[in-house]
Image 1 (cartoon, rainbow, N blue to C red):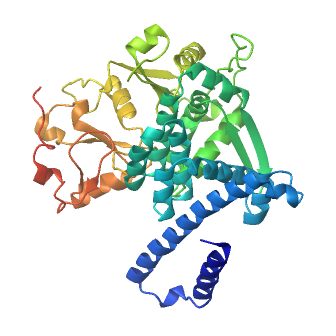
Image 2: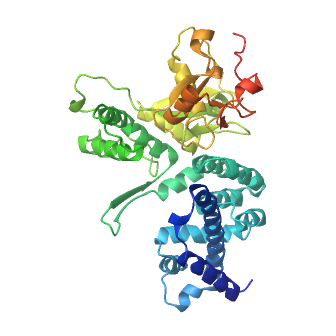
Image 3: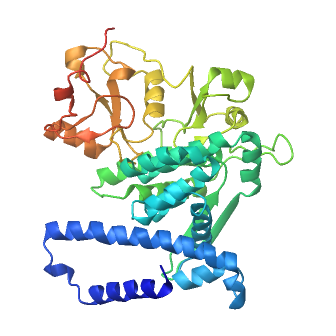
Length: 425
């Protein structure tokens, strides 16, 4: 396919767009056209990545006096140099992954999905089919988490990766053309998890205040306010590194006078590590060492979190399954809460990436079972919990993230039968 043909395609699309009036399309028709428009955008993103990589390989950026291929692409596409660099990297990887390229060529992958899949599949090409299948049915957050695990598993030296990421750590600020200031922190997963945990108490307090005032605030807006509140209040000095070049563990923050006499729960970083890995110092085979919501980390990162104090809650297991513990109360025990947080870092409804204020849900009503088991608990966001309560939607049979379906769906537990039955106690 030559450039002339692509130019003709662009001209036809421009002609269509110039005469298009969305207000004349029915709601149902708009949804169908949106799907087509999105697919065209995805196809164009894959083409752009491939062509950008080829142009960079040919050195076209030097001919026009650009500082780099990324600078030229940024100027051509109206994006930042960092975004352009990510597109170039995606294009280079795409050329080595024909199976992924074939799926991208028909518009099945968005630009962020394509970047995540090519990054992980470059490290482990055999994982490409599995990642493509996941991309078709999961949220972007879930896909990125799995791609991170895949890439980490293919990297045989987790400690070297941690040192490499630490050496490249950065905190950047810039201002958009509309006057909005931005802050971007890049570091190891456990460091970002500590920062997120440190602002969690303020985040929950701010959420309660907003709800009491009748204000509806976006979750990311409240998180921004919580971070600013923690910084303004000040933190304890960070301890000195254990050795030159080691990451500096963050110190727990105080809660400030403005909370009055009210006691708030301490910030918590949730880690899952296999017992053998913890004792040995590194995982082997299928053993796991991860920060919930952030991905795989070396065992040394867990040891640093332990040394920092006040942050860590660990789920220590044998194999992938967290063992259920039964008790006769309605509310889960602290142990069960920690297990649930690990099993469901996001809403259990497949495709829902909500991580905030998840509600514990009994599959079998506690009034009927009179027992609380991890195996019979899920975590749902407020939206999906309301659908279950008011419209009888339910999670399909199984554990972990899975389809959330209406009552007439054959996967609904009332049809499957087994999902709603309590196991013997």
